[in-house]
Length: 62
Image 1 (cartoon, rainbow, N blue to C red):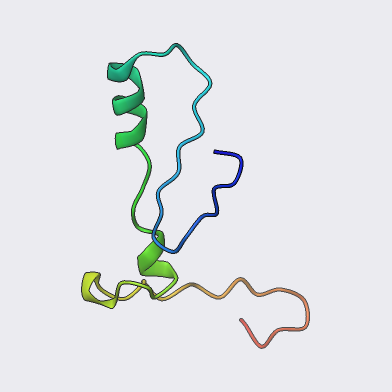
Image 2: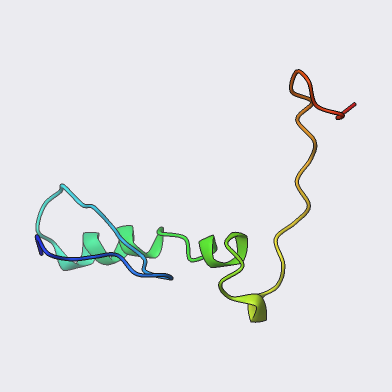
């Protein structure tokens, strides 16, 4: 695993608990697969929502 290189659309879980398949499966189910929507890597799943303006200093945001 030391040579693993993450690729687009990978879902990665770092787990430091008991070696229980049931617990690991439960934690893995909590890993979101929505990042591809925000990175525009899976347009078939829809477009990300519009982000609200944060109004940082020097921006034209109101």
